[in-house]
Amino acid sequence: MVGRIYHVGLTISDLDRSIAFYRDILGLEFQGELLMAGEETDKLFHRRNCKARIAYLNGSKNVESPPVELIQFIDNAVHKIQSDLFTTSISELCFYTDDIDLTYKHFIENNVECLSEPQHFNFTSQGFGESKAFYFKDPDGIILEMMQAL
Image (cartoon, rainbow, N blue to C red; front, side):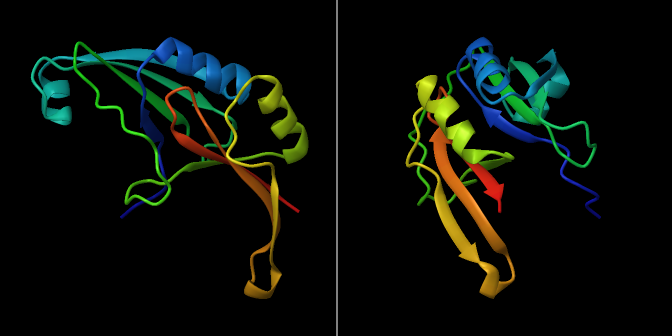
């Protein structure tokens, strides 16, 4: 029934700030923005008079690589909670890089909050190979991950 993941949506508080972060810091390509409003939008989000600014960014031309959808609700209160890897939810969104050490340095130079420096993992004996990874936060404190297969 499911063909592929179409996009990954993140509710954020300031669309312009988040577009700048995901485009300028992470290097994703801005694909466009739209405004959702009206009866269908109210029904979809189960909220009266719902309006949302939505932007799409992607790091790949590959159709199988889903874009990030950033959603800023207009005139509706968004409850901001601190992201927590140990709370049932989508724990993080993982991005891939070819040079994790350079990416980490770029993040530090741009004051991105990183939870650690890149860590090495060897899961070869479990059939998953070796990688390096670290967690970081976007401007709303959403936890994201950067990974490089070795």
